[in-house]
Length: 328
Image 1 (cartoon, rainbow, N blue to C red):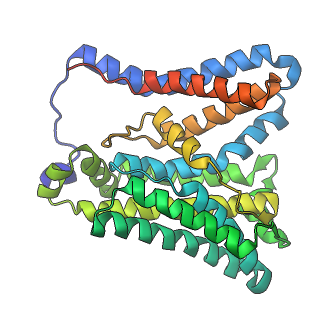
Image 2 (image 1 turned 180 degrees about the horizontal axis):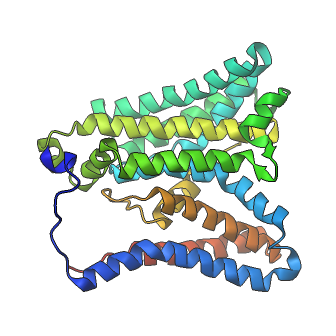
């Protein structure tokens, strides 16, 4: 218990080569982001890449991925995975739109969040109490969430006419700043503090780093895993509500395929799929990098198939560099 509650305890020294390799691994995402930004700025200068409206659109388009990546960082750092986030976002958008129509702003907001909490509890309890691997648990609930959203919406878009909701949840601007940027800033700061400065974050990292050792040190590892899966689904529900606010409707397609982008953003940012390490800032930068790549490829005029190939190659290269472990 002492090790987890005493961050000031001196750490064993590591060889300079290992330290430099670890620093390179942590910094590659930022180097890559700047490099891609500079390349696109030069090659797409006549396509309006640096236009303020285009840059703000990149933020709007990647905000939901960034928010889900914050929670996914906790999940991966604890040694688990959540494949249901995209489906939960779609379900939450539909639930919110339906309830807003009958019960107004507050009712819709609470119902949307409740849908995420419910899926998160199912994921967490099946994983921690029954012992089903989170990969299989969340794969199953992904299908359940998508099917439920399609069923209750009858596959149709559900309009949202509440202007206050649309402004607060993604559609508004505070001066030139999109409200979505404020959401990312607030959630990002809270996530960073929670992971790096709080005992909960230390226990998450300990659980993912060595679950047995963490358990014998007094960490309730099952509770930690349930908590991060609950957090992930709740954040996915919030992302779905932001999708709904920005596009003024609830649709089961919102979030479709987002789980891959969310996991890629976290891994690009330096979070290990094996658990034990994670960085919130890196995950947000990873999400922005994916948005940057998507935007640049569209401006290059590539068709969709070519975009998939180029995007996949860039992400593979970046992940390979950022996840390379120094030899001991």
